[in-house]
Image 1: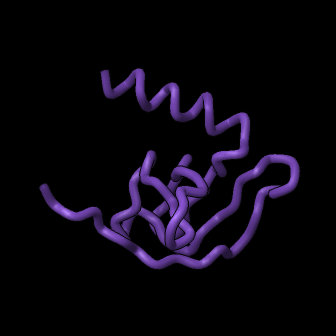
Image 2 (image 1 turned 180 degrees about the horizontal axis):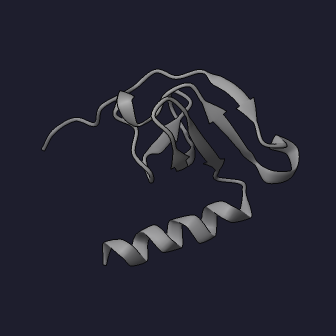
Length: 79
């Protein structure tokens, strides 16, 4: 088994974090980020990558109702 790759990123914006529970980071597909990647705060999983561009990615947090639907779609696609 190989160890997961870690990519350091910074939050550069939010999409109404209190309501939508998502934010934007400064890393994208050109940095190796993929839709569905887990996002951690150093210890805990705080979300998953929902959408990406070459240079940015939208993270949906685990407290968002979007996260449940998003994770369900990923699990269904993987099976």
